[in-house]
Length: 425
Image (cartoon, rainbow, N blue to C red; front, side, top):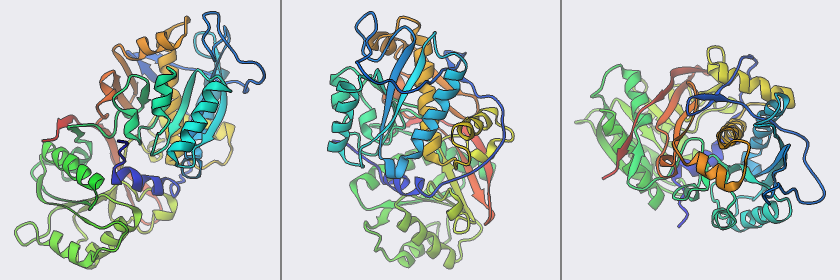
């Protein structure tokens, strides 16, 4: 069964709302087993299938063909992000003597069957070596790609990134079985400056919401938060009595409000409960979610602490990798807002380049899988990772950052920090 958490489905809505512009330039580094890696991109190839000396589709002595697959109306920016990273790689000579011929992002419309059709075209007609970036909440094409022995690299919004050796997510498997990341709880604990603070966790009343409740509760407790309230109290669609839910939360700490409140759900539920909590007087504690990150959400997100899974663009002044990403994107698409979709496409491409670098000059699907699944750690310092394969096929990368808004702009409250993967009982 393909599983999508309420968090991930809510992110699907939020990513369309998240353009962030910046303009600083420095350098980015992707590390494979501690070594810096770079890679490249060239013009799309056309005509006859490209086959290497060993019969590998999509690989010649001088190029590698890749194409992306994703939900374009929500993650179309991933195309720009991947193009930007591949272009910088190509500008510096490629990887192991090969440039990247990037064919763009094939739209799956958010539909699993359309995704299978798109993947089939990429493999049988375009003869891609790998699918990069792969960013969609319902990756119905995973089984087909595995059968065809075609690796795919992206943001693991679908559980179909998990449990096979062909799917590589730059933040690991985000919907694992029996384990969870404690990164979000760790970040909130850092806001307080000491452990032992009280927390409430509220999710949607769906099977995936209950999964998220169990995972987040395990993570929060591991981060030394005292969870005094944990319920899947939000309805889908958002018709809950937010006032009643807020009242229950604000009296859950021995008749008092907890010091932090985690809200997981779609944008309507997050905003509705947030408004009710503030109207009921919750203004000094930590109210946190993973949605309210974008210029058109700056005003309503005042007072909220928003968790993001990679270093935010606001860290560019002190983070060379983020600054380099912004510069790369502006080079290929001047004026392009750096949305979370753009960021996801960029790091998906960067992960692929790191894996190809490690595989060496004799590039085949087998050599890539052997290299990427043998003590391969993808890390960009203070930005994304460390994500180590093969463990990351079944575990998340327990890292992230917190941002806050003053009503007109975001700032970094807690910089990119890593916690731990913990069991879910």
